[in-house]
Length: 393
Ligand code: HEM
Image 1 (spheres, protein in one colour):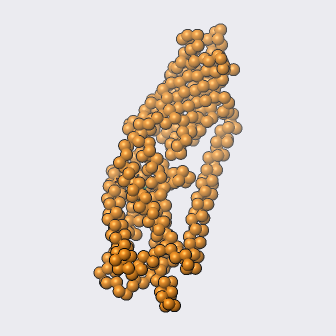
Image 2 (cartoon, helix red, strand yellow):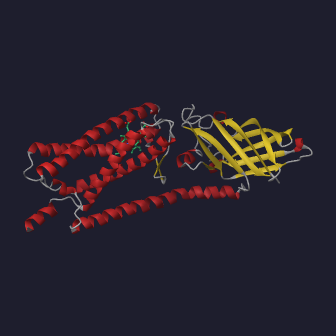
Image 3 (tube, protein in one colour):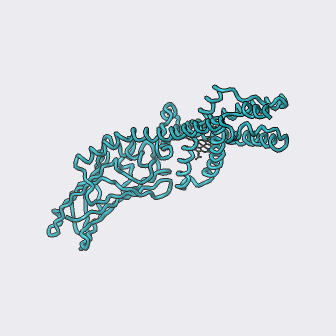
């Protein structure tokens, strides 16, 4: 009896190795199903876009956990295999395990390379918390579209090989458990009566909690300069007031609505001499908010609003005329990224609640918005609808 207890303790993996094994296993099986499902959806389906963001977050988690598992494995000896196991089976198990490690690292890496090289330049926000940088050599290559395509194929083929290896691995485990009944599965199963397992689990839970806390702290730290710069924008006198400036853009065939949370509209309306009226409006481009973190992170970027260089987009009227009692025609210059173009739009007066509203459509390429990253409209449409409403003085 004593000797069988001894066997149990020394012939098992410890809590950390067991915990990592099952966590990675669940994530990989989920990612394989998720990957196959999401790639069946229409490319213009916003749900596919959202699933892909989660897929990338969990995929990078597998990469991090697999590195931990590999480090553990290199620092510890695996418990010896039972002596009754034939040589061919030991060799087959060893080879399968080496291939599995190779794919646990290689598959997420191929995904990371694919999104880094992709000319779509879509940001990866891990769990909506932490921005995953694009891998530098791939993000800057001249032939990045081909590299992205190549690694897309690698990712797809590697996932196929992984499915075959997993079936072999699970098949072998089931054979040991139910045909040979030799307790091989107990080497990698949680044993809550074993104090060593409990210690390992405690440590493992600690690592997970520390990783989450670390991520949140890091996230707060990298967002701090952003908060400061937004605050300084407010100090420059760009007030929110009672204005509403909204925009609607098209992403993957779907309308996405957003607003500029900081805007200023100064209107001087002379109903008796309408031609003398004036309107000046400005928005802080970095405050564009669609509620979709990937889009909101991209919009202030160099190829889009380039908010660092051009923090404000503005409109200045040059002429007012009357269309009917409640509608005026406003003409003027719209300046975005230092490109000024003439526009005109109807301004509807709502005297009952002393407000006015209007709207116009621009072609983003006229202002070189997204011209390098999205030169065609297959992902991001050309037309952007801008609508606004403000209280009359
Ligand atoms: C162990 C981890 C991972 C597994 C098991 C996995 C599995 C898969 C599978 C099965 C597909 C569908 C392939 C197809 O049939 O076309 C897929 C697609 C995809 N994966 Fe992963 N993946 C992993 C990690 C990652 C990572 C880390 C990233 C990026 C950071 C990533 C990015 C993508 C993208 C963007 C697609 C969709 C490609 C498309 O839209 O056609 N994956 N993945």
